[in-house]
Image 1 (cartoon, helix red, strand yellow):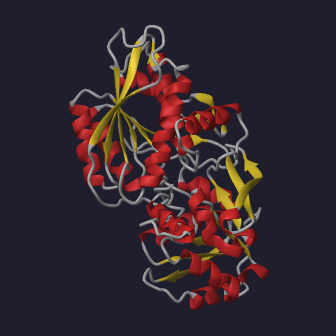
Image 2 (cartoon, rainbow, N blue to C red):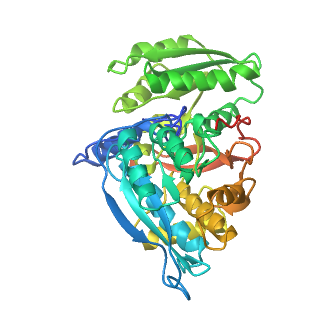
Length: 438
């Protein structure tokens, strides 16, 4: 899932889930047009999205050829992710991170105990039906480990297939809270929407008696954000209401006016699509920032220009941006991704973390992926040093406990740069334990 709300989206979450936004589309010739379209592409991540188009496959082998690599039966991993479609930018970040993480976790050998890790890519284009078909194809070809899922709608369909066939599934940027506790065989390598909302809540401290307004589109995505805010902040005693605009609305002044007149202590913005820049302009014109804390999610770097001058007035919740963590693992990831011709962004750590989890599970089983129950057991309760810091796979429901960030933007347009104001610990952002569904 992407991030929570932003001029780009639509999560998300990551998107991809119930609390963030992003959206992108065709590139334009001007820099502003390209940014707007890339941002629009982010539209489905935080939220449980699912977009269109078909997937085909490709194969890859991990890492370099260290001593003993490939001398025993290989371990086959299937990656089902958005190589094309509306979330392709997120998919590329995930794949870049996965390759870097596989090299890092295997110390450049691409193998565990002499068993080379081979991965095959399948493009779901954000379409759950295509993802299910791809997952079944990979399982039929002997893959005992699946990973990927850029969109939440995909993850929620692939997870049950993994359980039916008793294969390990590690979901990626998909942020839907329902992925946590979905079944015994399903894990996640990214954050979930609840962690986004917990981060948003940290901007106002004690929520009891505080008024919170959600400004969103009247769509499944927007309604899911409203539900998530009520579930988190409402449970803490906040008074939550919403201003919902038709997704087709282009004149956003009336909705910005409603948000101002609601006089909330916190305005949580969950927006998707090409009207994001217009929304932030309307909020500025209505002087909403003068008396209200405005919070939204910071998405991929291409979206930063869409905030315009309002960017410096917004309080951003954030899953990750390049340089946010300052860890040695982050440095290794960024160096590897840059060497491969890419650049780290919001969901690059999700791919890196997935690779770390897969390698750990295989190592714990001496280079074998045949016993899925043993793979699952090796991950439950595992704590490790990840890109963002110390990360734990919660045994009870497979939630991925991790730090989250409060972020500010300095500058506007192409000059906009993020910086961390505060890092929330994994415990501070942790979701409640979800009962294991299956």
